[in-house]
Length: 220
Image (cartoon, rainbow, N blue to C red; front, side, top):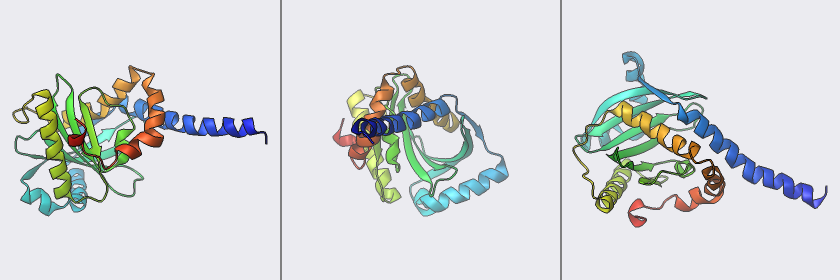
């Protein structure tokens, strides 16, 4: 096999794979819809999520269950179970993805809908693959306990709120709306700027690994 065939195959793999994966994600998430689960399904899904997150942590930290939702995208349907602590803008979401070996956990704060200021703390480094709109901040960590994840999220939330001069309390937020808008936002942002698909090549192979285990508070 000639060397240029090897180079060509490698280029297709290293460029094509991220573009295919990213394009599929953008296509799937752009039209995502969210509905509240039926009571029986909600109870079963909530129990499964509480076992992963830790019912003790949720109760001791004052998180109240707000709902379990079916999230339908163009390629599959997954479950999301959400809790909120008082009037804090942060929601904890346990994401049950078909075929995944374990549940993904995200903590999502909406500090301003109008200005698009959000903070996400998650367990999956793939959270760094899609470029975020200005004002969207993401940090991901592996192997951390929920109390540590929550502390890291609060630190990030405070740093972002201080930078942008926004209040961290008082927003009237609906869990289903937060979930749906969060899923759609990044996909629609990338779809409106097709050149960002090229950035996903770097983010897939390099960026997500460099940003994983780094704190938003150190980057703002």
